[in-house]
Amino acid sequence: MKRVDLDGVSAWFGAHKAIEDITLGVDPKQVTALIGPSGCGKSTLLRTINRMHEVVPGARMEGKVLLDDEDIYDDDVDPTSVRRSIGMVFQRPNPFPTMSIRDNVSAGLRLNRTHKKSELDEAVERSLRLAGLWDEVSNRLNRPGASLSGGQQQRLCIARAIAVEPDVLLMDEPCSALDPISTLTIEDLMAELKEQYTIVIVTHNMQQAARVSDATAFFNIAEAGAPGRLIEAGPTSKIFTNPDDERTEAYITGRFG
Image 1: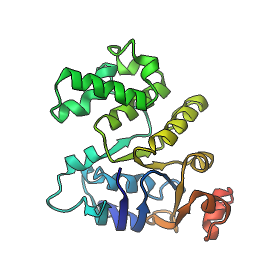
Image 2: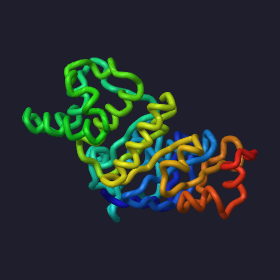
Image 3: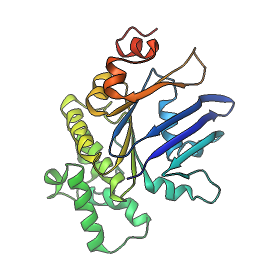
């Protein structure tokens, strides 16, 4: 696992500046939650951390994103290698619908030219165990990934992300489409995975942020259409009980706006 540091990160979609001058450190062996109102750039920031932002036509960024002091935007850094090292789990479960459970998990490994069956089988079992899914699917690995329930599909996507053994795991509202029981399962999983990965999660659920995260960063916009800015960041216990900025307190307590 590695540390992530953002230094003066701004990002645009065409002429629209989505986030402005974000400086934030993300420690390993922790879950860091990004919170704030819709439109303040949390998901955009998440995508700058693994160079997914730049795949959007007209999108660009300025600033530095450091992975253990290496700038992932340096000219000699391969974006594909960055995305292997910094995995991503999206808001809605997105298993490859025509692929089996086994092939969903091993897809990234096969793209990385790992074709030996014994190695793939070992990685599939390891990843599904880490994702807390092995006991539920071990006897049906050849069934389509899309045949699983929503919560199981999301854990399958987590297994797929960690199969390539990334250093960092990014999760963009991973529970927003799930029922409460599946949500708690994913939250318990995050608590286990943080021992092996640096985890950054975007969530609109304040209770979830308080439950699962060790550190919290609050983002806000000055007005509609303005770029998102980091208001404050720190240990979750402090942000939720004694924040430095009144805007943070207003948001967390529901008095926002």
